[in-house]
Image (cartoon, rainbow, N blue to C red; front, top):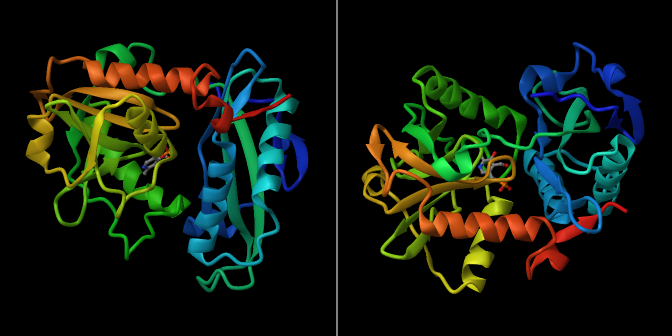
Length: 306
Ligand SMILES: Cc1ncc(COP(=O)(O)O)c(C=O)c1O
């Protein structure tokens, strides 16, 4: 995966990629004291467009607020403008966008009080998170031996950098066992989310979303619920147990990076037909159209770069 770009946006300046560095004594590096987003821009008939730019910018600032970062120097509109400037400067027609708002100075007493914050934004071309065949074939997952974060131990509504050590443990474990992704259970033993995606199960024609109480409130999750509702599917939110995954007709994950991807196997048990099922495929198509300016919801969800 090439993550290079010509420029990275750093505190309002477009800095050449190789010069976009931070000092070893950056506290965010030591304590995970930063918050980030994953955003995508897609090609459309009217040039590149960012999917749900304001929702991502808002979540970035809310993540910072949850961590107790104060006096943020950026508004939602400032962040969206910076996304657009970054994409324009790099000339991408489609890309993944990664803003990171981090404690650049201070915080050595383990308090965010009085520290200096910085905002950086990089972008790179990242067409397929799970590889080109994953969408049709589905991926293989295991339930992780690592428990997902407890909402009162690490704030799960914040995309805080430090929270991702939990994801890294689970993803590394699953990769070493030969799986594509890890499904994480919450501290009560019910299904929480994947390392960077939310989860849905389909049984008897009903789409069930794992409740958002203890997990990151995914922007893709919310979009799929809207698209599924528009398309007339029966939808519910409710707890999902590990064995409910095994006997589901379909299980799929969704997130900005991975988009919509089915599980063909979980813990060595085949799920449904063993490939992406009809509901997952229908939602993949609706989502793909929406993000590329071809869906009914596209006008309200896209921010064009031009
Ligand atoms: C832990 C976690 N859950 C869910 C998601 C999906 O969120 P979104 O659809 O907003 O990308 C992500 C990705 O941001 C994530 O990191």
